[in-house]
Each structure stands twice: as structure tokens, then as C-alpha cells.
Length: 250
Length: 91
Image 1 (cartoon, each protein chain N blue to C red):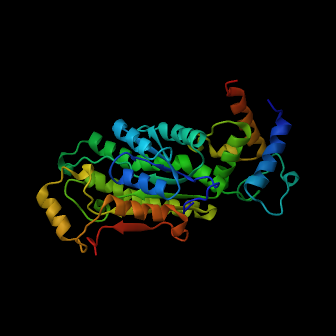
Image 2 (cartoon, one colour):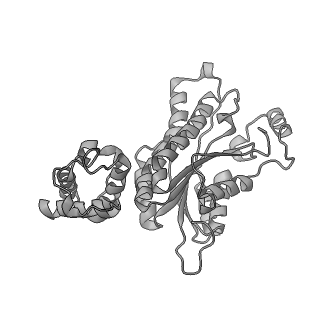
């Protein structure tokens, strides 16, 4: 499930949630270039998803998906396995970010962020795991956030969800490891994507100045780490969190 | 729809094949013998694997979180569950 397959070998299938933009799109591109056929999901950006699929010429197939939809993951996995093939890898990348001080956060806001960012990962894992166990093969990469390990004002709910992902990752790795299924997480550092476009410039400057590597973190850099963890190159690694932050937390 | 005995017999074969049970043949498994713990010694991960094998064998959809643990009590409870799903399956 790793390197470019030979001319007659079937391409392994990976599912990337939130694959039409930012880190997700770079991951779809990296996986497709590495020999995967990629099913990827989009929620709002249909045109971008279609363009990506066209550009990758059959190596990427878009599916509509909302993290909050509790019944969709089971059907989504079924559709992908019918239309594209057995899912060997899952990248839980989709997420929803909305900042606000805890003291002003309504219950609905808390519930919504937790349900989308942590519940969505839980439901996607639950939907692919039985099939991976049956095939005794599979790799899952969950995309967490710096805010899971480094507090950021305004991100109590988002940070709680992203920290929850790390706990889920470690325990799930223990549950399914005996059947050859691996589960890992990544923490991207500050990556200039649309998702962080509203972060104030002075905050961006402070974050960037703490990086050890002046080049910072790119979506391609994060995608390369995700590809590594999804592929057999990391066959001996499970339950781990890989930080891609240009040395920000060093 | 296959009769009860045929489903039970097939499930026993699936248990041995899908779960790679060494030293156990389908005929060693009793209809009412407990599958977990003291019985055949299966665990909850085995149950998930078996669930997918049943989906493939019978062309049915099973969501793990919608199936109670009691379904996996024995071959006979599993067979009853499969027959129920087959009966509800649109033709």
C-alpha cells in the first residue's frame, strides 16, 4: 500500500475527508502521485472538488459529505467500496474551526464543534474499521492541531476536540493493532491555508517567529508526513503523533 | 432464503475461515456453544471481522453499533439474526 504500483497491480484506495482544499487537497495529490486511488470528500467547495478530480484524471473521486451527518459515514464507505474499491487508508482531515471565548460559548456551539471535529472522526473510523479488520490491513491518519498541545485563546472547544483526537488515536491503535490495522495522528504547525486566513497578522507573526526553520510549514510538507504514516513505510508505527511544525514546539 | 441449518453450517465455516482459527473445524462448533470467553474464545474484534464476513456472504448491511452483543452469543443467535436480515432485505 505504499509505492507506485506496477502496471498491472491494483491501486490501493484511500479516503481523505475534507479533500478539496488546503492540507486535504495536498494530501489527495500526494497520495495520487504515490499510487493510490483517492476517494475524497467535500462539503461546500464542489467546484474545487470537481477541478481537483479532473486534474487527477481518474485517480481521485469526489464525494459529498458533512462531518455532522451521523448516518452518512456508513453509507459513504459502502459507496466508495462499491464504486472505487476496498479502502486501505483513511485520512480524517475534515474539520470545522470557529473561535470564541469559553465564557461566551453557548452549549450549542460547544456541542457542534465537538461533534463535528471529534464525533466526525469517531464515526468515520467506526465505518471503515470492520472492513479493515476483516482484510487485516489498513492505516488511519487523524489530523489534529497545534491547539491540542499548545493552548490558544478562543479555541477551547476546537482544542478539546483536537486533543480528543489524540486520545482516540492511541486507544484505537491498541484496539485494532492485533489485526494489522494502524492508527496515527499528525499535528500540523502553522500552515497558511484558507482555514487560518482570519488569524490576526500579529498572531501569525508571533507563531512564525517561533519556528526553527525559516521556510515554515507548507501543505505539501504536511501531506508528505500523512503519506508516510498512511503507507507501509511506517509499518512499525502506530498510536503515535507526528508534529510537522518547522520546530515551533522544539 | 436458506434454511436455518444451512445458515448455521455456513456461519461455522465463516468463523473458522474468516477468523483463521487454528485446530478448529466447523463441525467442532456447537449451535448453542458460547462464541466468546469460555466458549470458542472469540473477542469483540473477532465479532467485527465476522460481521463483515456475514455482509459479504449474504449481501446484507450490518452496522456494528446497531447490533447488540447478544447477537454474537452463539451460532444459533447469529443465524437467527442473519435470517431476520435476509427476510427484511428488499428482493
